[in-house]
Every structure is written in structure tokens, then in C-alpha cells.
Amino acid sequence: MVTLYHYIHCPFCVRVRLALGFLKINYQSKVLPYHDEKTPLALTNIKMLPIITKADGTHMNESLDIIQNLDANDILSFKHLNAQTIESLGKMLNSLGSPIHSLCMPYWVYTKEFDEKSRHYFQSKKEKKRGLFRNLILNKDKYLNQLIPLLEEVENKLIPYYESERLSIKDIMLASHLWGLYIFPEFQFSIKINTYLQEIKKQCQFEYHEDFWSEN
Ligand SMILES: N[C@@H](CCC(=O)N[C@@H](CS)C(=O)NCC(=O)O)C(=O)O
Image (cartoon, rainbow, N blue to C red; front, side, top):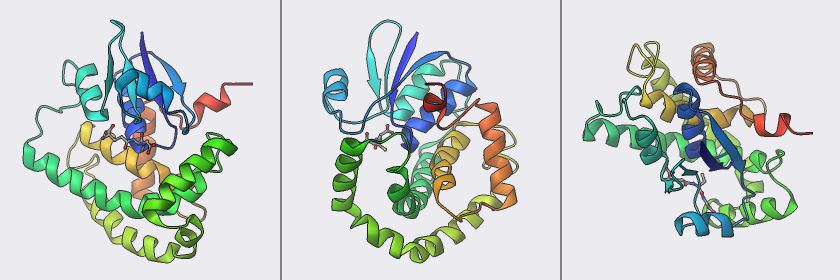
């Protein structure tokens, strides 16, 4: 069986969870504490998740490599994407990710995924790049204003999936980046984007905090 090492909040990890669910691949889920450097370093020499261990005992990282490897029959139409599409998708995700992460990081750290140690590790690491979490929240209107036109563009491309009539890798990449926003208080997706995300959730059998709700 495949083992997935992941963080709940991480969009790249959510990518792999969505793909595993869509492809109906059973896997063992291991949520690592954010300050655990030892486990990922031992598996792939780099402190970065997601990582999978395959049935043959080999380890892989990089979400898109993992998904391509698991999706041997290209059910997610990865191989149809040309370099230009991949590049523009990457740019779009970076522009979305920037305000989404600034808005959501200060809230992610107070979900059950984090304890005091991992929260401290995460916050000090991320504040070096983005500034104090306190200021991210004080400046939330700036990030929301960046986000809203981007979401309108996304919405126009849902036909009903992203630039497509059927679910593909592009939806896995988009939905995983948008999902984190559900955590941000008072933010509401438009009806169209919310319906889209809920459809992806259904088709990918995805439950964000499932690992915690199934524990005692
Ligand atoms: N290109 C990688 C990116 C993965 C990534 O950035 N993971 C982040 C979490 S969102 C990580 O593991 N960061 C470790 C750290 O900052 O300590 C992928 O697609 O898998």
C-alpha cells in the first residue's frame, strides 16, 4: 500500500490527497508535525512534503511527479498538457497562492494539525518570508483585494471544470490551492466556485481534517 506523509494545510499535499481519492487508490495517511525535520530528511534528503512511499519501498516527493507516477493511465489528462499550459497554470497558482497563504497561515496554525512546538516552528519560518502574522491579518483587506479579481478570472474559466468539461489535473491543482481559504473567517466563495469545490471534494472523496476526526 502507498503511504502518504503530508501536512493538512499544505496545498501540494492536498493535491496528492485529491488525486489519490479521485483515482481511488487506498493509502496510509501520516500527518507529520511541521517541526519534524528528521522524517522527511531520512526519506528524501529534503525537509519538504508531500512524500509517498510506494508498495516497493521507494520514496518520492514533488506533488506533480507523485501524481503522474500514480496515474499510470493518465486518467487526469496530465500528458495532454503542453509546456505553455503548465507554465500559465503555475503562474496563476502563484498569484492565487500569494494572498491566500498570507490570509490563511495565521489561521492554519490554530487548527488541530499544530501543537505549540510545530506552531512556533511554522510561524517563525513563515514570518521570515511574509512578515509578522499579526500584520498579515491587519492587512487582510489588501490581500482580499488582490484575490477577488483573480477569483473572478478563475470563475470565468469553470466550464464546469477549469477550462474543461471534465475533471483533470488542472482542477486538482486549482482546488487544492483554493481549499485553504475555507479556513479564513468571514470569507465566502462565490456560489459558482463553492459549488465547483464541493463537486471536486465529492469526486475526490476528500475530507480536509479527516485524520483528526477519525481519531479519539
Ligand atoms: N514543489 C513541491 C512543493 C512542496 C512544498 O512547498 N511543501 C511545503 C509545505 S506547503 C513544505 O514541505 N515546506 C517545508 C518547510 O517549509 O519546512 C511540491 O509540489 O510537492
